[in-house]
Amino acid sequence: MRSDLVFRALSHVSNRYQLCQLASKATRKLHKPNTRLQDTANEVLCRFESANPGASAPEEAPAAQPVERRRAA
Image (tube, rainbow, N blue to C red):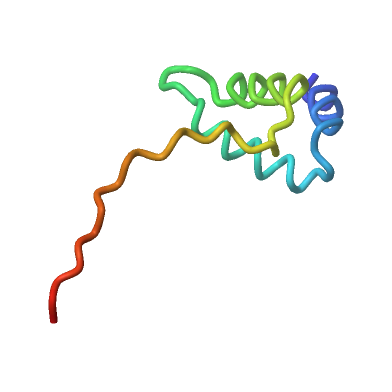
């Protein structure tokens, strides 16, 4: 049942409101057309059981930006 998934996911998130916000964002990003939204939401909650959804993702190395040149006034 989904309530079991929610309680297990709460072990990584401090409160239910934050869990709801993170789950809705993740569900929107992971949802695939022609699948049930409920199944996607359950999959997200299952992923939250094993990993901390609030932890920041590893950042990619920033690409080299061109050096700005100053112009004479």
